[in-house]
Image 1: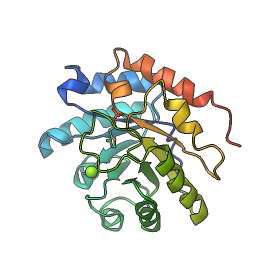
Image 2: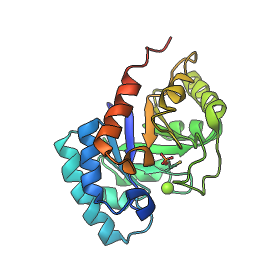
Image 3: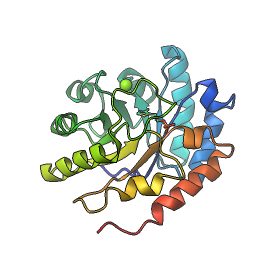
Image 4: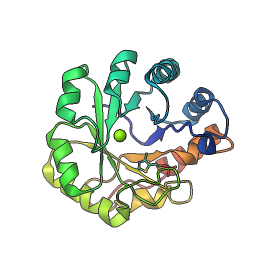
Length: 225
Ligand code: TZP
Ligand code: MG
């Protein structure tokens, strides 16, 4: 899988987060700022609306050569020809998703423990969303806040597996903590490949500037030891 996971945007259309703006405009601005993956995450729309929005987003992401990943809904990903899906622990499992998706589809899985991480890799996940890192108002129902300690534990276990898998940390990541989040994985065999954010970009007054600043902070970190 040749996906640049360094700055992974997850969308949210709830008014408190999107602040009444147009999701497609916000996503396009974020792409101009340097977002490397877009995940369309929609919990409240019906299937028809989701497909319509996903198609619009896909036209935009394709113009920037950035993969579009669909949260939860393998059917929507297939319908719009998205590059991949992101599955939680309560969603379709990776084996079943693979039966429905093209061979080169990107499959990501949310993991909050070493056991979940190992299982996802064994099933053939391409990347893992590791978290929740910090408590966040964006997703109040997170089962587990694993923090930097839990994240390190998972990263170490993954390095020992010897199977390549991408990792992004998610939950409460913003301009002020992004370098700390990535740097806490220093000293282990393989650090995080990037961070996933919702509100730090979607709620930002200027999403392009927010993405650009995050991207700068990520890329100016010294290389891992
Ligand atoms: N999964 C775990 S935390 C989260 C998701 C989708 C939301 C992260 O949102 P934010 O605004 O970046 O804290
Ligand atoms: Mg899910």
